[in-house]
Every structure is written in structure tokens, then in C-alpha cells.
Amino acid sequence: MAWQQWLPAQLPSIPPGAIDLDIGDWSLSCRDLDELLHALHQAGHEVQLVVTRCRDTLISTAALGLPVREASHDVHTSEARDDQPNETNTHADLTVHRGTLRSGDHIETRGHLLIIGDVNPGGSASAEGDVYVWGRLRGRAHAGSKGNCNARIVALQLRPLQLRIAELVARGPEEQPQPGLAEQACVLDGAISIEPASAPFFAQQT
Image 1 (cartoon, rainbow, N blue to C red):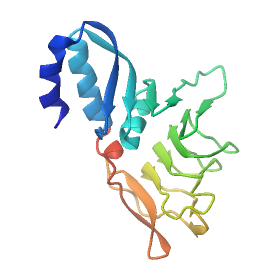
Image 2: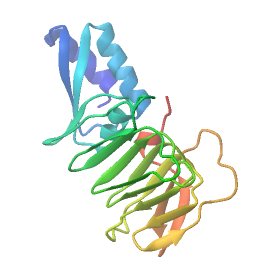
Image 3: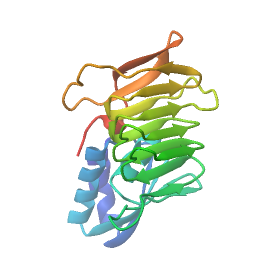
């Protein structure tokens, strides 16, 4: 059931004010989630925490800058200010970094990694799980760093100097990406393949 069908029946029983929103297993893109939050705001509700069991929804929520909880793990995003270094918050399942990785910057984490910003040439990101870049990936990225061949690298623009998934290495494509089309790198038939991203997280950009 889509939230548009579920919400009208639930609103009368929810007192106006701050609420925690439990989305369960729903997979929502940033646009889906933004529309849901707007509908709740119009009804007098302010979402202070999103709870979800879906990784794509968790990442969409983090990309919008909202506190989000998956199971028993809290993930909070942080804004990078001009007068201080970019900030990274690490948790058991997901690390969220807000800000651009510049030349010489490196992030290495367990679990999955979400970068809300660009990875410039000379910057690098590594994760035992997936690597998501809500921006342009032009540096280096390593997903599945402990040997997970099912990991993937997803970016709004995937033009890295080097890609690694587990022990496999590849260079990024040279041709320009199609406008508005997110891309992912994954392992197919023993080699790294680059294709349009299919995850709901990247289905819509805001």
C-alpha cells in the first residue's frame, strides 16, 4: 500500500505536533519522502525522527538531513560549515558524511557509506559494504573492502579515477553520463560493470 492510501485514514488519530514516523519496509526515494513530510506538515505534524527497516529509505532520509533510525542503530547527519572541517558520523550499519571529499581526503568505514557531496580527484572512500555518493564521484572508491563481491558503488555521476569492489579493480567510463541518470558499479560475471542505478534511493533527485 502506498503512503497516499495509508495516510488519510491515519491522520485523524494522530495528535498535531512532533511525531516519530515509522515507515517500516516501505522503499521511498527522496521525492517520495519529501512529499510525505509535506503532507504531514500541512496536517500540523512535524517529523522529528524517521524509523525504517529499508536501507534505501534510510539513505533517502539521511540525504534530506533528517534523523533516522534503523533497528536499534541511530544515524544522524551533520552539516559541514565553512569554518570547520567536514563532519562524519559513524554507526554500526551506515556512515553518513556531509561535505565534499577533496584531494588528500579519505574515509574508510565498516558497513555502508553515504557521502552527501562530491568526491573530487585525489579523494577516496572505502567501505566494507556499499558506497553511495549523493554527488559526483571523480576520485577513488572501494566497496566491499573485506571481500564482499555483492557490494556496489552508486553515484549521481560516476566518473572516478578508479573503482574497486572486493579485489576487482576498474577505471571509470570516459564518456559523459546521461543527464539526470544515476549510475552504479557492481560485479557481473567476474568483472566490474557500470549501469544505470535501479535503487529507489536514486530514482528521483531533489
